[in-house]
Length: 125
Image (tube, rainbow, N blue to C red; front, side):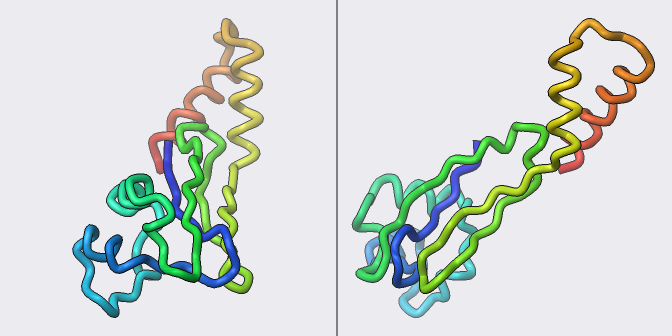
């Protein structure tokens, strides 16, 4: 599972001085350079809760099932500082997964080709 930190209120993403210190970042560091799925950032937000963000934000964590074969990527959309985590999915992989789940005993050439497609796409990430 992938955990992503985002700002759930209007105002903009920011970190408190304590969170910055725990991450080993100096005052003035551009926090927008941080990966929102950085395990260190996620850990600090979990431990500090509301104290992780600065006075203009409320940080939350969204969990994404990145083991789902249809998962492609995530990105953040922002409006006036309020962020939304958008998860993109590969619909073809989702359809292939559903077909294979409905017919798990099918060993025909098409089913085998679909299984190979799934493996190649899952390992290609």
